[in-house]
Amino acid sequence: MRFSSTYFIIALLFFIIEALVAIFLKTGFIRHTFGDFLCVILLYCFFKSFIKGHHFTIAKSVLAIAFTIEFLQLTNYLEFFNLQNNHLAKLVLGSTFEFSDLVAYTLGIITTIALEFKIHKLWIS
Image (spheres, rainbow, N blue to C red):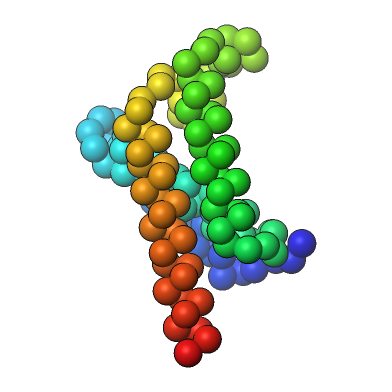
């Protein structure tokens, strides 16, 4: 474990963007699909803030977490935890399964890996 202030600041910026999207946009592509795209990038940067590991391993872990939460939305898991009336839980964990969310998560992780590869390649050169 180690702390990376760079990744933490990037995660914080993505969190602010996500919060602004959630506050000001109630529907549409940016709120639903692009928000999910940004969400996995946010999670990746947050994990990279505290975990020293290969970027591909962390990216796969973030994608697995996102997919797990999305597939849980096929069940009544919020009711199981008595969170069905909790607005924050619904906002963070979601309540309806959407295949497009899986695509957005995947594209977000692909973008993250591509950026990490580019940055690493530039850093070494």
